[in-house]
Length: 447
Image (cartoon, rainbow, N blue to C red; front, side, top):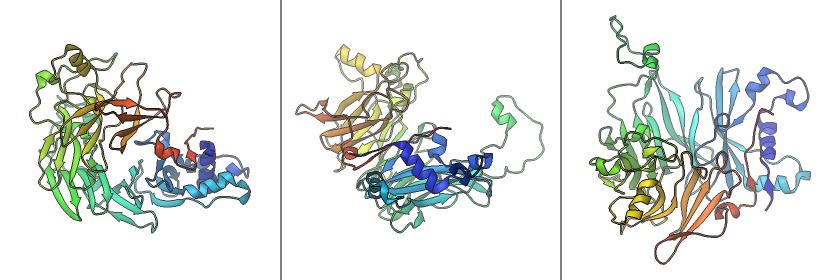
């Protein structure tokens, strides 16, 4: 399988799309040239799911770049779509000249502060890409959800103006779910002159009293969904309490339910407080958030696991969104503790000591462990890029090796045996990636 080094990808990108003439030897490299250079995915900071986003059908990959536009005095974010067939032809037959240029599917330059395009992800059928972008109305700044069609290049807004979209999951332009917060005011409301009172306020609030001030009251906050093309307000803000703005929505295959991390309504705090922090970390106050299943037709909520999610004690594995099996009967939970409702002392000690990547069978309620999470100061700690079902009895975990254990395999494959236990199988590459005709990596630096 040809291996396309990231330097080649960067060369294709910047040479064809954004390199100023000075870089080609026609003059000195200037600060203006530097501003105009495109950087991958928000100044190289990485992105959930990885910077390179392959389409599910294996025909395309997408990337996000950001560059400065001096003429607009603003950054410009672009979603580029490459056809794998075109890139493969360029690698295998360089004598044929430059490859077909990638498609600038979406370009946004709407604000002086980036990133402007976020949360880029492919639709399950590879027909388009969903994303949020920063927008402004007459009074507010907010994030709006869009979907872009790869073939027609049409871009469609999925959410109304002035609904500030945070987390979302989308299967099509008629099946999606998202959460909404009050949008940020562009101008602070007028106040009557009053003596300044700073007691009990943070330094940030004192210095910047109107920074990031949200529009309130705002009745539209909470969880929204579009089911079969019909928009509905599923849960209001009081019924939809998420930890620190994090919900990690995962829409079911039929588009009628969603998994989210919510505050548990009646958590057994005396029991949940027994869960430990990672090696080298101190215990922090209990976060009573856990995985819930929400019915999008009636708004009912069901606690999936009688235990908090893994971030409760700073167990950072980075991936939190659940993955559904194709039939919608199983869930892969990437970060959850196990309930302490067992009697074996060794089993209790193990469950208290760390969370797991686990599989939950919805019909039986059986929770089985796939891989123990390792975080904190553990030398074997790792970051998870994504995790999914390959089939009902096979789980694929892809690791982010940019920071932790860079020499370790990029993926792990697990099979469930006849007794219901998950065993790691041979192989260290995602089968979907192994089928691709090329392999792409991102690498960039100031040099």
